[in-house]
Length: 356
Image 1: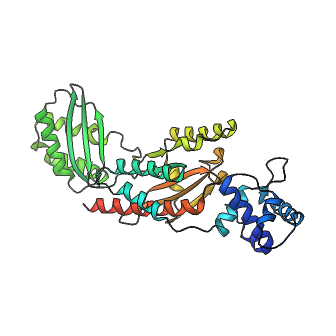
Image 2: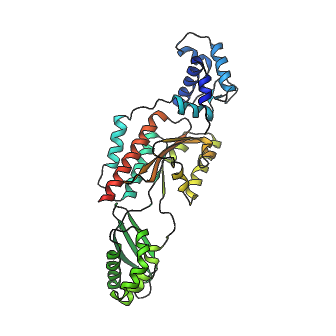
Image 3: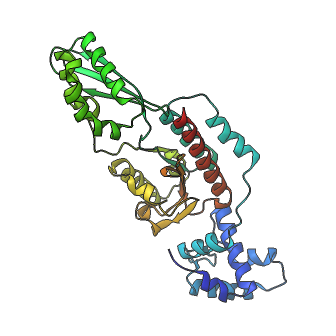
């Protein structure tokens, strides 16, 4: 990120006020701001020519730009960065926003994935942007394992975790399985899995199966030893990125080039197999971070901004993130506290469920 603090330190009060007013006006309505407009609302009596000279100086510093032949200016990416770092006044979370978030999380929904899906929808609705929610890898202990026969050559293993998350995985069982052998295999694995995460269960699996294999009949043993049962997709990252509110970025933007950029962004997100990069955006620890335009490669092509915060489990380990993406003229002052509050609340809820 650009260090713009030295530029701000060298600006006089008038330059700062002109700059702040241009940015705030742009964030409010998206339009270039002209010197005459600023003159009418300026705190001291100055001429349009004076304001125009100040704006030209700010343009020379790389903080403002002229998008068209008109005299109006908009902030550059560097200008937005300086404003966000040094001049942004973050609002208190509005009671109405707090109530909406609390209502989203206030149900008794046990499945964490469903809860996070609903949070994503709420965030996009509240902010008129698109929301990104990175769900956690499921490090919670296993609560229950069950097998369900779907066809002679297809079965389902249902993994229920202590944090309420449920995973269903379809696999091809060894030939000849019966409801009785599936029950026996599930009982054996449940006894083995009690209190363990999938990773811990895998570590103890091979030694335990050798030591206790005589407890199972041949069919159940074949099912337990098939290794496809629990470890299918092992090694993949099981977090997933929930994206809600794409239409908020596509609607109302009639510039074909911008539409194409936004589509490109979502195509990248949909195709991205290793979405760990999204979580790495928050790897500098707790708190909200703001990425503007090309400051991160994930969103550089779309010219978008991202307001993102990690959430943590009971051990203060970052396990996921929530964020809002939109045009660079996002209402940062309102969105920062929304994202911050949501991330803290999600972390607390997931921590509480992990204790259950």
